[in-house]
Amino acid sequence: MRSRLAATALGAACALTLACGQKPASIEVTPKKVKIYGLERPQRLVARVLDKRGQPVPDSPGPTWSSSDREIVEVDGSGRLISKKEGKAVVKATLENLSTSISVEVVDAKVVEITPLTARLVGPPGSPLPLQAVVKDSHDRVVAIPVTWSSSNEKIATVSPDGVVTSAAAGKAEIVAKVGDLQTGAEVTVDTRPISKLVLLPATALARVGDSQHYQVMVYGADGTEIEGASARFTSADPSVASIDAAGIASGHKTGVTKIRAQVGNLTTESTFIVN
Picture (cartoon, rainbow, N blue to C red):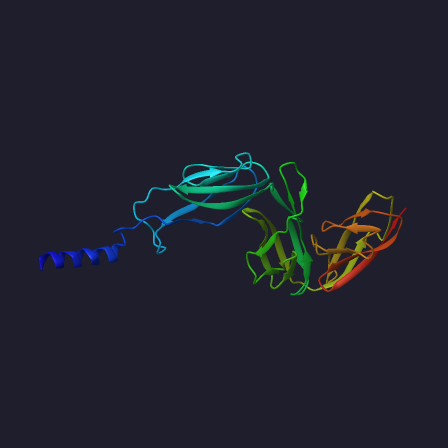
């Protein structure tokens, strides 16, 4: 009887602790797929040794780690990755006859640049202002990677997936463009004063193909006084003739004539841009 009770107690202890007779059956690694933006950046992999029931095996030794291409990504004994060069590699966790592979992609992205970095969004709530973001690599080349936009205070200003900021109430908000763990913020001040008039300068501009022209907008409030520092939304009627960026710099691309438009709040004005 005593031996039967002891066996029952031992069985209960085994059921509670799952420690009796547990053998490693698989290795679970998280995350299962890794994408690292930037060179010389770390990323941690976490491994768990599981039994056939999918339960962790207590006191199991950790796996050994290896990389299929150490020129792209290195991995140390604790599962810490370091990105070295753009490309793809496979990192493997191995314990005895068990192994798990994780695909790792390294993207050469060094910085996110936003234009403009500071903006004054003038006009009634609902006024739009587009921001532009580009990602550059370690060689200062533009990389075609989409960014994720967010606002620090959506009660002041919201931002769309393509970077268009829309005012909600007077105040300040930081608009952030992010790729992986790289990010840059632009400070947007929302000024909800009504606007009575816009003046776009120069009224007419002449440039050669390849040249640029800087446009400025003068904004006047309801009392007729100028509102200094107001940001404008610039567009070109024919971008094939000339395009214009968020900073108001128009670039001539081919011979022709286009209209350069500036919007502040609910008002729009335009000027003529001639390229020859």
